[in-house]
Image 1 (cartoon, rainbow, N blue to C red):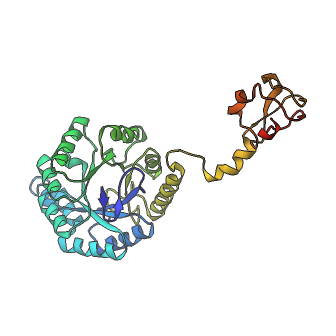
Image 2: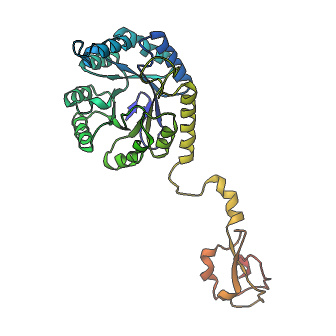
Image 3: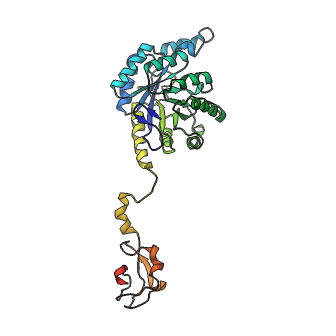
Length: 332
């Protein structure tokens, strides 16, 4: 799967998404500052939420939440400006639609990825519409049973749309006992797609552990100020924490490296010093046929390696060999 120019998957750099969400509080200038900050922290993408209040709450039955979402929502024109501003700052603009109207907006904006939030994983009609756009989907799996995830995956596969799954717990904030990062490897065994992690814990430690556990995408709520108004500010990473998260992720990638198939360059000089060679355990006269009792293993590893010990048994010495001498083939 690719998001813009970035390939997503095992062996590729972890894709880091700064989740702006609604932490801009509907203020375009704050949203722009968030884009600037996330780009300076070297996040790969900044994610907003595209919605109209009518897609989420009833104005008649839930007027308070309806009015709050209206306050926090971004118009199509504002989203277009933010996308262009993201491009200017060399960071990918992606977003989460909450219904057909906002999905249509993201299609028209030609975003490089669409995020499907956990609450919409069981909305199969919505999933199908999103998959038919054939823009890569990032699907969160919070609050879902395994069978519900399988059903969603089947729908996306049928539409041949590239996608990834994010292990997620949708409690805000998520208690440590419910993070369950072992799910990342579990999902990798049963789903043949990139697996990531969407974090709702306090701090960034869970994200770092998720990277070490094999996550190929990381999504973390992001804010300019945890004391700002809004429900997600407190559990979000501020600029310092996001910067640390990106830095730690790149360091963890170096620690993880690749599957070991050979000796590393840094080990080469130590190999000769620390490996052992076959040596004389006693003084040996010239013309002596060697037996095992005459031989021992000593550092450094500059002579005949221990693996060839049995090959030396029965060979004859050309000259006298003093006790402790590292053997070489010219002596035999």
